Structures are given as structure tokens and as C-alpha cells.
Length: 230
Ligand SMILES: Nc1ncnc2c1ncn2[C@@H]1O[C@H](COP(=O)(O)OP(=O)(O)OP(=O)(O)O)[C@@H](O)[C@H]1O
Image 1 (cartoon, rainbow, N blue to C red):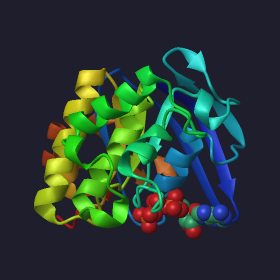
Image 2 (cartoon, rainbow, N blue to C red):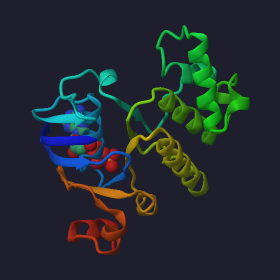
Image 3 (cartoon, protein in one colour):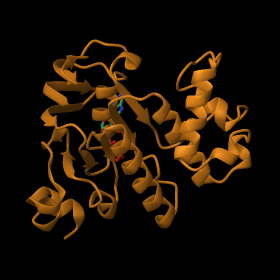
């Protein structure tokens, strides 16, 4: 459902190239050293970075030149980007309409998404009045209401403790599976990568096509083995 062909990005001295495909519904961990180009790759897929060449296809549609909101892609970043002066419900509503004039059906969608991440009783609270984990849940709900077929996650749960991170990863997998969405997620933690189906290793601007996690983590190629410190 994601096809990246001959993608090239140049950022100052840094160059990245990628050629790979991801099948629908796969959960793919993106792993590799700091500065390797993981965020650059996801930002390019999301339409936030200029590319020097190549093409990106989502669900059979060429989105190489499409605006970020017309790509069938939703992104979730590390800080979740919640607005402190808006309630959680309003923050989630922004995922549907930036101007926040929601129809009744759209308001129902917001409450449904909040319910799916276990926040039905927190809709009217502001981000400052809930825990870090609950903020992460709200950010995930905002991605859910967008109902996009491809989710790109850039270390969204890195600031959470290990138990909460695992809980959020499982919740993300579950809601993505329910929605039939495909997920690419950057992580630095090998144990997080092990919860995915496939693994993309990025090293110095080179993007390895996805490999099944089970096989790759047991018998990693030399560069991944060095990164993992095994
Ligand atoms: N706007 C920019 N202009 C020039 N170079 C940039 C820009 N943004 C990032 N870079 C460079 O591109 C390279 C890849 O950065 P990127 O953030 O994609 O790496 P990463 O793998 O996500 O790293 P980390 O794990 O530390 O987040 C780095 O060498 C970085 O310094």
C-alpha cells in the first residue's frame, strides 16, 4: 500500500535514498543510528520535506506532489502537538476540522475516538490537567479521527516510562488493526521494534527495505548488529 521508488533527498551535506514497498496493514519499525535519516524519511513521505527525485504511492495513488493533508497519511510526533488552551475533545476535533466548527456527526466521531483510547471521561479537560500518558492517548485519538490508511509515528511515546510505552504501542497496534491502517514507526528501542511485523533499518541515508522482524532481530545484518550492540 506504500510504494517508494527512487526517492532522493538532499539536505545540506546529507543525502538519503530509498526504494521499498510496504504491504497493507503491516506495522513497520524504523530503526537506525542518530542522524541516519529516519525523521527525514518520514517527513518526506508526509510531504514536509522537498525531495530531489523519485515517487511515493499510497494505496495505489501517486502522492509525490500532493499536499500533506491530501496524501492519505496521518503523522504523530514526539510531543503530540496538543494545544494547551483547548480541551482534549477540541484538540481531537482539530484532526477533522482546523476551524473546529464540527457537525453533530463529527462531534460524535471525536467522542468515539476518545472512547477508543480510554479517554471518554476526560473530554473536557485541558492537556495540562491530565497525565503524560493521557496526553499521548489524546494525540493518538486525533490521528484516529483523521481515518487515514497510513500512520507515520516519529517516536511518539519516547518520553513515557517503559510500561506506559508498551501500553501505548499495543493500543496503537490495536486501533490501527481495527482501522485496517498501515503503520511506520520510528523507535530507538529494540524491544519496541520487536513488537512490529517488519523492520526498516536506516543507516547514513541508506534505507534498507522492510524485513520480517522475527528473522532480522535473530540474525541481523552486520550494520544492524553493530547498531544493536550485539
Ligand atoms: N533542515 C535541515 N538542513 C540540513 N540538514 C538537516 C536538516 N534536517 C536534518 N538534517 C540532517 O539530516 C540528517 C538526518 O537527520 P534526521 O533527523 O532525519 O535523523 P534521524 O535518523 O531521525 O536522527 P535521530 O535518531 O537523532 O532523531 C542529519 O545529519 C541532520 O543533521
